[in-house]
Image (tube, each protein chain N blue to C red):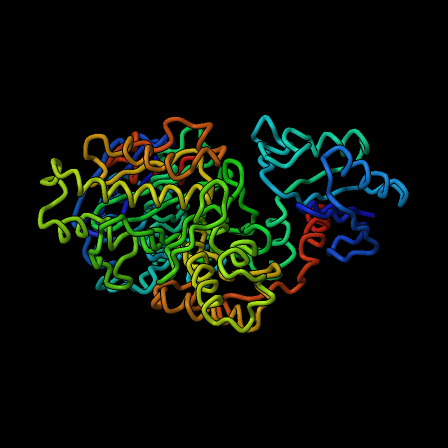
Length: 280
Length: 280
């Protein structure tokens, strides 16, 4: 039996399942502070017997780079009770003989959605925006991990909204997250489905994001998930705008149609990815 | 004895040297078409005896991803006599028992400049702009390879120059390469050293580029090389603008000062990197 934990900003999912990512049993509960959240997850796992391995898909910033002294810990975050909390420490002291693998939530989702691709990126648009990357068959970390939501896109023509990111104002997350749409238009994304201008702006920013990924990490596919991406026609509009920017220059884009797709596993990508982290 | 070949747009360098990247002997000659260029390099190497391995640092687009059917070949390029030329084929038929490793020129430069870093990026600004990345100790390829010069930065305030990229107009290369500076200001970069506005724009674009790398591949250092980067104070200005954008958010930036640096090996980074490709 293997286990997975997906830590989200508002809810945590703990599951037992199979090496191919199939969830056999799962429990969803509200995320509180680090110690309490992991106590609930660990107690639930103990009731199901000893897992041989636990994969963790964590919100960030989190130290997933084994070369760092703070490997396994949550890094500086305004979220109460998380900065410095050691995920690896909590799990290893509860389950001393169990293998633990830690990844960012978006990288775990990449793993779930990669099927057949060695070079693929995943963007999730919800309360925040995050990006995960697999390049050359390996999940990309870098010195800490990608913070793709805090990259600065070019403005959509006519968009003078200041942005909602408390750090950067008009970074991708500041201009295109769910709360950014709600603040800019005075309605939640689900109530904006008939507002063509709202989606013109939104797909502009995601096309900018795909273009940047194409020029930097050069994926063969970009998966866009999260609540905001569920608007009808969303992925096709992003792809159309991406191709208009790319002008036939990028072989990775020319060779792969569709290039911008929704996640096959939807809201299950994160917990499936957590299982896959220890599944092979 | 190991050998290295650095293919540049205008000149090619072929060298023999040591596993640590030290060049023992080298020959520089004009790059013509693929077959002729490699004949010159191969003849020069034959005169120096049989190398046990050859590392090649190639301009792009070039297929460096072994998973591709066209591995080892130059891809579609307007450069006469290069599209479809097989670098690996030419070297393997000349030296059947010799190990050949192929990389992009910018990735080879990363290898030469990486010393001690597992996560580092390299940007060269000359006739074009290219970017190479090492992440988690591995050179990054993706589906084909990075084309960082063709990523779109935000405009510098007051810059309405159309850009010189024949594909994309105002991509990074279109706005900030040597020819872009020459066309925008009517003078070559070396004759613009006293023009504060020219460098205000130029360092804006490179700070945008560093910010994008930080948010996507998350290096612990960015090396900027190439002729344009040799203006006095260039790297410090880019770093200052980068820190103003990042607002203390990125641990990789906060933990590494200086973050934006010139290449230690200058114009030798490419050929040293070619040797290092087969040096370990």
